[in-house]
Image (cartoon, rainbow, N blue to C red):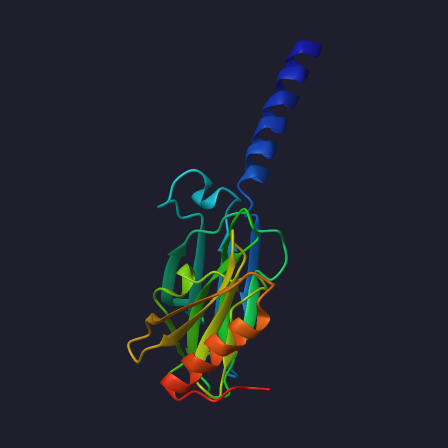
Length: 206
């Protein structure tokens, strides 16, 4: 009898444990629009992501209208630490906060993110292709609304800065400049930045 009860207990324990393992690592709902019929959801199944496979998709972003799935995107999220997994930042200069989702961090703690431009008029989102390749050492890349450019500062053997623009087809494009910062020759860095801004017609911000 004791062995029989023990066997039942182990079966129940196994089923319960298996069920618990299926719970996602992270699961949150996001309200992007004033119309509450639309609800977004960001789910991370586990922490594996690209540690195992560059093409491994362990997360998903979904947009629902009621119970109807309006948009779905399979993502790879590596090494989420529980902070800044979801952010709202305006990257298009229209005064509407866009959606930023954590992608991965590297050995130097540079972070990368997915970006979705939020369209409140059509209750839709547009993923910015290539944004997830932009590295940034201080959270999400900065956005300069005056010049409509994205800036990133990357920790590396020699730290450096780069600039990007979002094209009308929702693609992030490298502006073609890399400014290295050895933390010694600050005046040289300033001269390089001034030269770039003058060439592009950008306004230097104080």
